[in-house]
Amino acid sequence: MEAADSQFRELRLLEIDPEQLRDVIAGGNLEQTILDSGASCSVGLYHWSTDGFQLNQGRYSFPVVARGQFPKGQICLGMVRELRSPIWINGHGVTRDHLQLYAEDAEIFYRAGPRVTWTAIVVDRQALQAAALSLLGHPLRFPRSGVENLVPDPYLFDCLEQTIKRSIRELCGDLETVRQWRDAILAAGVAAIASADPRFSREMSQRARYRAEVISRADRFLRANLGGRFTSERLCQWVGMSERNLQIHFKEALGMSPKQWQQRLALNRARQLLRKHSPESSLVSNVALHCGFEHFGRFAKSYRELFGESPSHTVARMVARG
Image (cartoon, rainbow, N blue to C red; front, side, top):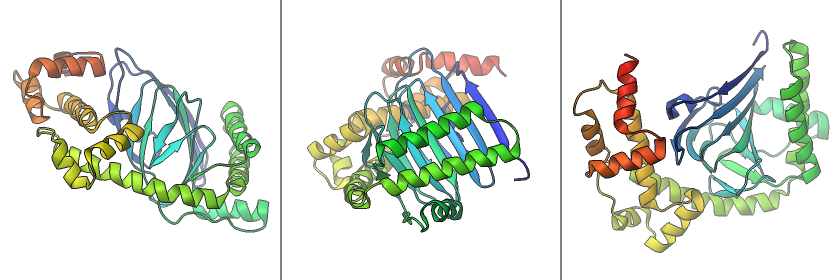
């Protein structure tokens, strides 16, 4: 980049459109599934970037599942703060004391409750290793694929958080100042990563990979069969797990049963179709059937409870906008 790009976005969504959230991390592609919202929601987003480095921060008022891929060819450091209960990321039960380290092109399957503040630092591997050589005198061991969930020294992790907060509060448009904040964040990130116990992280990663694969396989099956009737027996056969154990995994990962998750996917898909298709008299009923809802009254009730408006209201707003 020739100059720094620093911007702040505070977005108040009057109606929920998860498509607006696909690029909350610049260069990434994250599909967001709304789990609950009611009548209103709000999203706060912050982003600044320079020279192959970007800092992203977000806060949603509603619980959400995000699945997708980070920007191509870059490492990502992730952290979640101000959370009231543990969240789930790629098989890991994550608390505010954890730091996630994603390899290049890593995929993410993330579930968080409302009012969680997340931060994603995206950077080239060579830049992170250059910071490690400067601070430590040797490079750090970074994963070549997937994600590691680290538990850094609390003091050094707090230093990283405070450095990020100060950069957001004090950042100005001067390119040299922006680069100084970038270097300070990289140094604080390296110190936090180096303080984590790699043996503990490896043990956690082995168990997490299995849990993540179970949920990912089940999720792929449910998405592929959204228009059909839910059958626990077929799902369990596909995943290769007993119904009881699969229920336990889903409760831990997504806070709900496989059947409830399929319904959330179907309702989010229905909203996407209602917002994109040309309105016609049979649109709502056609969309309901396409997404696997045979009882229109129940579909309308579930849709209203999740999105705070009826399906026909969604269509009416699209008509009003032309």
